[in-house]
Image (cartoon, rainbow, N blue to C red; front, side, top):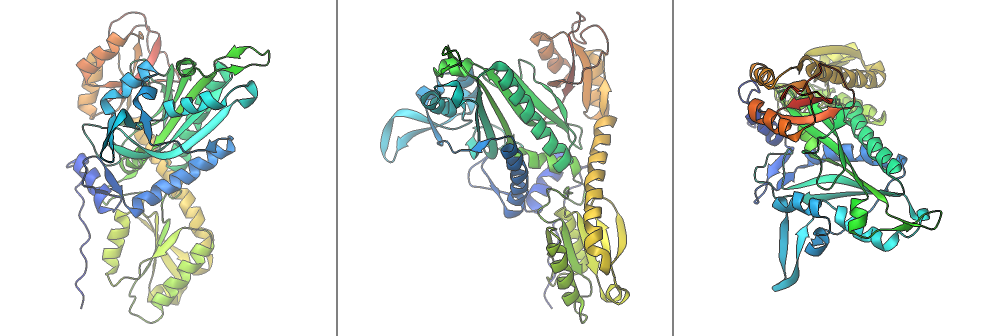
Length: 479
């Protein structure tokens, strides 16, 4: 008799959240380490999650008339230097190519950390008239940023993402584009990934290098830390002036166009893990799960059980549901634990007694609940169950966000909340001065997450300096 494979054990999140997270990433076979620090291998199961996110986003981009393009991997140093704020912001993270074969290059080439300069160089050659605008481009690629500290999904030196780049005739059009794409990200997070978001503006201190405005969606993880999960940037005409991009308007006058960029990365997979996971492993929302259903034959050695499981699998897949079955010789208990660890939303169990009664048992991954379902109504019932799971997961995450969002009137109170609650989103009033932002970080150990679009009046003075307040701001400890 073959020895049964052992299910990998996962550290309890209450014992060590960081270790729990790493265990889930590796033992659920999402990711592996490569021979170069910070460069991770995205395994098939992890890549399948990214493919589903990519498919959803790409469809939404195409609905808003964006076109996919491909830009070079390498950026000449002289090109990168054209926009001062941009290059200074990325200089510490740049990796450089200095040799071509065995010959030293005349000019260093940067491995792209982002592609604004490449798009601008291209547009300077092809944009001439108002009729050429808007340029609505998107690129699916990897980028390289030489981070000092790395963690699976959350901070890679090389990571997969999409980067949208657009060019518009007016500031109003560009700002509308920036806000529209942030809404796309928010919709994907909430409707597809069951991750509630807080939308807002980054402070000047935290905005993207070279941007006039950076919009962000911030998500709260299970451990009450914040994760920046997507950003959208309005550049004004700064890049256009640096790269001499001009167009003739309808009055035949030369104008500088206005530019945007926006990005969404594989970091989101880390967010899904930390928003929904539990001590058994992954818990995946049905809409993003590589497999929405797994069929498990129970007492598979008994006549007809395996055949019935295969029949159920075929009918479930024919109904347009992503499904698999486990016909391995491992015990049902091992199979349950293994597929729970991988977060498959719904498990269908079928054994001899079930077949005789014309039923099967459905187990929801997001809760300890089993339901008996008639085999005749299975393909009608499963889609309803999956939608219920999706909605319940979003509701649970929203409750976590609501329960751990606090109001403070001082830096001292903010620090006390963070220490007592282990994190959370803390709302305060703010004068808008960078010095107070830095002082809050120093005194309370939190960074500004965003100036939320949905403003509240919590008082009249800044929580740090006591001067008249201009905005309500959200602080938090972030990944």
